Length: 400
Image (cartoon, rainbow, N blue to C red; front, side, top):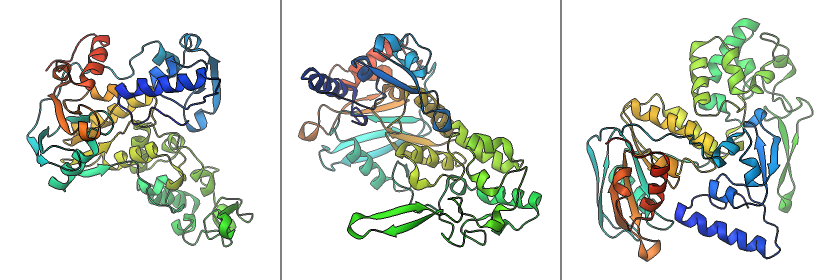
């Protein structure tokens, strides 16, 4: 199973973990991909991969019981040992102007009036089915200028790559062309530099009728996408195909152009430095797509952004990186409204709106709203109960 705890409230995670334990106890073999600490602690055996992502990963770092893994030095070991990758804020941000949602009645919402605040991190919490997505739809309906940053596909074309999405490829080609004394258009796989056989795709697609299409690497260009002429030019002993195969972090140190360096460094700050310069957007995971969209927005100011579970599919170490990026968005004057279940994000919120008490017809009501320190004072809030334990473990609460 691929992350069975994904998208679940902490109160629901314990139920799914116990179900998995029941499956295993009845002579079944259960293999899961997981980031949740509770799920790891209840496992019999952990295979810890790493040490990083992309070219920095792919190795087995350790195999053992949770108790054995806990003694290691990897990010997973530190998580099981209780390390906090996302520290509790020492102070909460000052709340900005109120942003109202009035009379929300979509689906199971009970005509609630909700207040969010500008220039801070707002979190919408609650168990599955409590009305979080419905509230966000109401928010977007009443505030149509808000921008969604989600994990949806960015287009199915393999011609759209990371470097073009962050608007860095044109300047990369210009620098390469200037040093190699060739035309920049010769360095584009959708222009004059394209392989004449595959048209710059890097593959040939065969129609297998009812069996679906099959892709084969182009034998002419070897999957590089480029024509022999384009590949004959070199910049610092690298062909343009070599450039596209570079990681973002390597390319950031390779190019001299200040704008290119800045754009690629933003990708590194969001933990995407392992991506290849020429990686198609269609090959990226949902979490990678969402972080790429965040990078696109880091230079914008005065916007309201809505994020639906940005921690989905992230290790606790990556969530720490994500929180620093979200803080950067707020620091330049933006407002964030985030739907989240992850307690590392919720504990850092400046304002929380907790829905419940349960899902479906038993949800749609505001159980609590306010600072995290205020949410824990509501005994009927399942989020408050889970959050209380986190705040206690972190040594108290941030100043209000």
